[in-house]
Length: 181
Image (cartoon, rainbow, N blue to C red; front, top):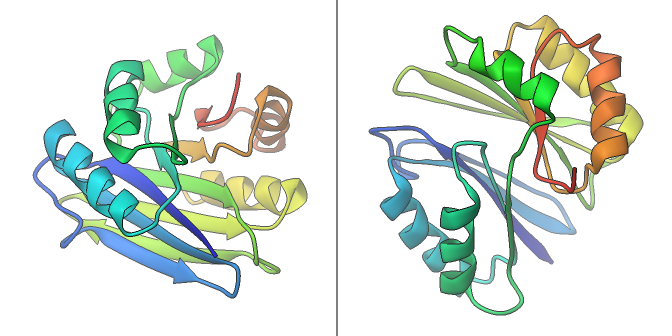
């Protein structure tokens, strides 16, 4: 069974206060907020010790902290953070608020989209687990229409798939990906 975690930087929070879990027959998935980079590193180490092998991190995490986490997690654990195409990053930089956050995750064992909502400390995260690109585009459209301030995609999304999501929402909301750009 795949064990996957998505970490969100939510200052002042912790995974005990800010987390949600979705499980199916093929995967166990956690979305959690950590209050700062040091607590995030400790949490990654803890989860890696519990058998989590795939981590995606929100765009607040940079290459250096991601590399530190990978070293702590050890061999066999893949960690990546969200990054943005230049035009999407410009949209993020122009945001005056970022309290509504959307995540789209293509995951094993999903047939129909499953939403996991996490709320605390003035931040709302909605993660949508989907099975393929078509469901991902529909989920991103729904998130964008609901007014999320930004959408980040899991590491399954390469540049081409990310661009397809951006096109599906008409560029209305900034979109980043943990995949290769």
